[in-house]
Length: 133
Image 1 (tube, rainbow, N blue to C red):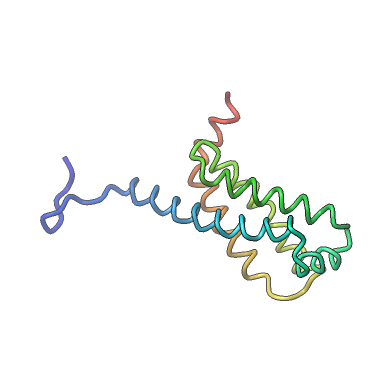
Image 2: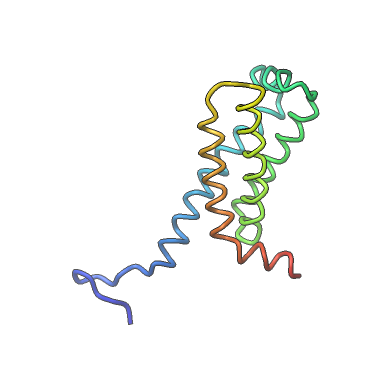
């Protein structure tokens, strides 16, 4: 039986955990979809950023594809952990690029890295099941 707190059943911690992960997944999906789309459509600011990195515009396209696919994966329960894991790696590269080449404030990529790392950890059982199949 559920515990009763002030006349209401207490919400199970697992349900709160799951809801919190879904909030991060939906917010992350929106952010990565917008960021990936701007890279794929050739927004001038993205062209300039990747020109400054100096590895060619192919990296802009590759990053955009990873971000859009990662955004979609975050919304599919079976793939959410894997999507969060690969977006964590993408954001790690973005933080490193900001610190070593681009300059500027890496706060947004760092915040996205932390958010996706939380999702990846929270959904790790699903990711493990993917690799065991």
